[in-house]
Image (cartoon, rainbow, N blue to C red; front, side, top):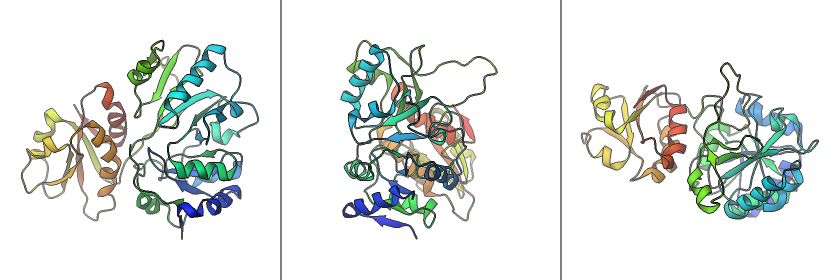
Length: 338
């Protein structure tokens, strides 16, 4: 059985991590599957337990804002100043910075064989205490089986890993519900968001007006993607049932064409109010922030149901504040209708 550690048990959980065990931990985004980042055997076991592709790098979680300096290679003065600004303004929080990695600090299993590493400081007091008690940063990919919806509760973690990992640090459900924004500071061609999250380009630029951040770097035709960050290459977030991502414009017609006995409508309240009272529904709340927070829970809610079901999930409009939601839903869906 997997141990559920309380706040008073942090030192015990840290000892498990120090000895190469796996302990899932809460953050403000989703729960992470923790292993001490300087133990290659422990890190490899994260990949094995999750069934994660070996070229999908891991994010390293630190406990103090200045700790990134211990693990990264030298930067230009301009980039170093930028890291200082970003960490002062956005850490602890849902921001991962991709930086050149210092040689010999982390093994290739952490970095995916690259010369960069993703680093973040999570905004959860118990997890920061856990990292400090362990004495070294923790890798922390989402604590779910690879390809499945990310976990936002302890129960989600136990559903996937009970008996397979040593423990999970108890906590209330996460408050953001999708993984961190990943910002690449290692590319000489500019600043790129590799994975959308809570923080958007406009949020960064509002705080640091000198920045210009792009959300996508086009790759030459025929390039094989070697991802610098999680979530760039592989299908993710998919439950064991059919998921259709459908825009509000087409949502009602797609629902009417479906079998009401095996279909679940997953949408914001304004859209659900237009459905028959007999419809099986899952509310995403009233706005994009609520929908983003609820998305993974919705995708997990009917997973494992003995009746094969289809989720018709509202695809929010393509505007900046919706990018994290759209990114996760479109990776989870087998059908997209805009």
